[in-house]
Length: 308
Image (cartoon, rainbow, N blue to C red):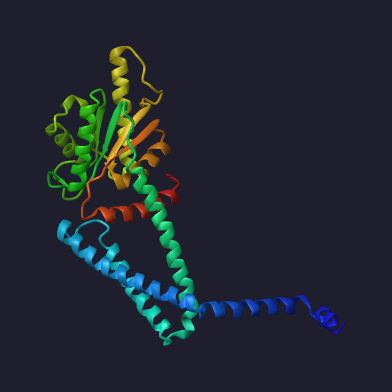
């Protein structure tokens, strides 16, 4: 009876406060448990391993591709963040910053959650780059990449090689070399692609060029206009009509590097292309890992803009 009276005498506020206190004690026990201690040491080891990797990989990129390589800043920046986090976590684990233990636990959990999300998306990007393209495409759009002077970079050379192989196997397909002229480029990326295809035996009359684009979205937009104009002209000369009212064909293969296929094909579908598939060049370069990482953030940005 006394117990019932005691419980009945407590108000909702007191009961809520007791529950919060109990939850806080359980959380504190969890924070100080042996399992959590091991988890934090594993997190510390992962941060230090990443710092070593970031240092070595930055060195490799600079050696293989130069200091001007795009997205190079990412590795020194994350190296610094990893080192700061590792030092802070070490101080927490050794008791010198015990007051920040709860924050360390929460941030460590967030760190591993972010890694799970990151690698899940990387698996999607990787698998998209390994899918076989359509065999009977009407057009093959080769997306541009950096040219140094008049020489394609290894990344662009890989795209040219993959496109040439496809075009030689499918003689009815028409190529669209897409890419404008950027800083340090004496010719447009489209011209570099065209020259590379011709060196590999693709007839010049099979190659259309688009030389205005400066991004993947512009590659697709301006290539669509080139194809539409070509389709319209062909229809007028033959007395027929284009495959579609907008002049675009139903089947297109986008040639790019494997890490870029997912985003490029999604963008194309959103922009109104018909049946679009990707052909990913799978050569591995020193910068390949970097480009896979960059694609993750590019997909986030394109999604926020509503393009994917």
